Image (cartoon, rainbow, N blue to C red; front, side, top):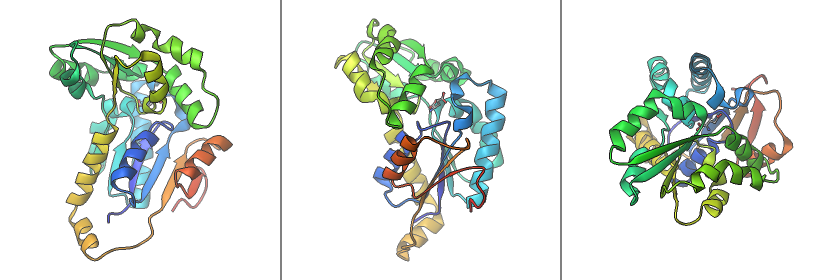
Length: 272
Ligand code: DGL
């Protein structure tokens, strides 16, 4: 077994990646760090986003002696990975929109990317499309409203279905057959999105692929293999750290249901 990993997002979106990681690494010690004070990231100035993410992630990774970092956020990954990798000597796994599998899958040769306004305007995303979706028509849809809807749903609030329908209207009117969920918040709304868009549209996200990559990298680490041979049984904890002073009772409950035993604000003392 390996040491702790940091899973990072602006909000609760990265929990869709956390869920996939738990499926393949059920006893992995995880620190879920979310910068909810600055949510939504899709609206942030790029230089501000880079600086803030690098500081926050590096500080936490060093504090807990993390073995790996997952940037479970497309808006951040499409921008901050080079700066982060320059600062950290551990593996950094980023999440980027599943353009390549979507282009392979689309029968109509017409795909969509639903992401944050930040992600759809990144040069990283444009290059991804040029490189992997050459033969396809690609429609881009940017929305921060959907980020906030996912936040509300996960915190147990009633979902504003009408608003969701309105946000998806341009997609419903398009003839695309494959839609990339290029924001980690969006799989949380996938059942309702599928209901609105119908079976003719396949929804794709990167969660399972990221989990496979994390498992692969952790098993590659020599000390991990050593620990496994030794049958290391040390207790694995799940910690959630947020950057606001407080979070809602609904979100605290949901995090606890997911197994997080320590749920604290970054400003609290004694984070370890
Ligand atoms: N979950 C994030 C993403 O994958 C960020 C959403 C936001 O804060 O705008 O892009």
